[in-house]
Image (cartoon, rainbow, N blue to C red; front, side, top):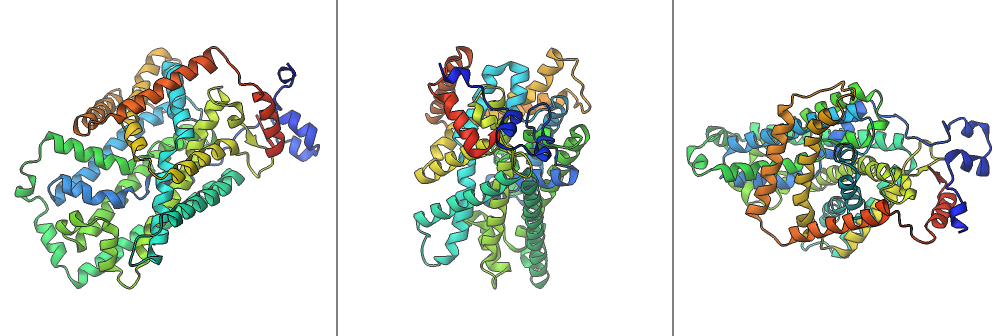
Length: 495
């Protein structure tokens, strides 16, 4: 009973109890902490591009080329097609984000379009099982540690240790200040672009010295023998493969509330960043094809290493630098953006209230608990090590949620016609995205049937049970409020 009489500390109440300086009290509006708009068009472009450009481009190039029977022209068209799919989806998200100016991306749009029960399924999985974070951290660590073990594989313990160190360092930076996070992301993305341009310059110089490979590849751009035998299933599969490196196209929708003038800035930044990424991905593939034959690319287990050994033979560390920059930058951008979904879900009562609180004494308010919970999940996955099954289990459902989010454009036009829509896409675009997403989901089941899809489904069904227990019936855990108050005082956070 004592717990029920203790209200949670608002920002105003916390300030009065702990800090009475007038300067800090003037920062509060209506006794609530809010995320400050710090992202303009330029930083938005670099933030979004930084999240999209990860290590995926370097590990997928050979798979894409193999899927089109080594056809150089078709592989380049496939990368362009993957960018087109991402662009169509981006346009849908731009309408949703500019009409519903609330952070949280898919969670927010599903909640408005279909109700809270369906929206509840997303943030809990992303918050407590952050498989993408763990994979990115391990990729960074493998390429960082491996150069020190030339004649053998790097010890698993060392890889896991450095992955944990990267997570802790970047998380600490992101918890300190949203402004610092955005500035760091600008530096990361600028360094990535500079590195990719270095790859292009290196390949051009190598091509000038020996243009035999480049001439052969150009003459066989659309080889009829390679094109024969490529049917609908192969085209669908290659499009499925190239969309993965473009994941993150809706990054800015996670943090709509932190964008200056989102009605104009968000569409400009999202579309511009994706155009830049498409150009960079084509640049990387062209650079590879200037010095490597399709057979060399397909047979290589690490294309970027094969390329670097031929072009940058005097700088063997260059491969590690490329991948580490891409992985670290992508992870840092993921912290900035995806933790906002956790924060918004907690703000609406779909996750523990403590996750919807902000640090009130940082240079700018940040959702530190939302970020902290994600790194705990990532560290646990890194310790476990084998989480490929989770990727299979949840990867299929990502296409389902993409279809639902795209369909939200049409649903909200019908259910909420009064919403102001400064940016509006033609109705045919969400229809195309729904068809493509549904095709990818069906293709996943048809080509890779696996009982793990049932495992993923069981997890979501369990979440619905939890929704009924904690949200509908409002069951409260004993001592939950006391623990929340304790953490508020300890961490200096407030709602």
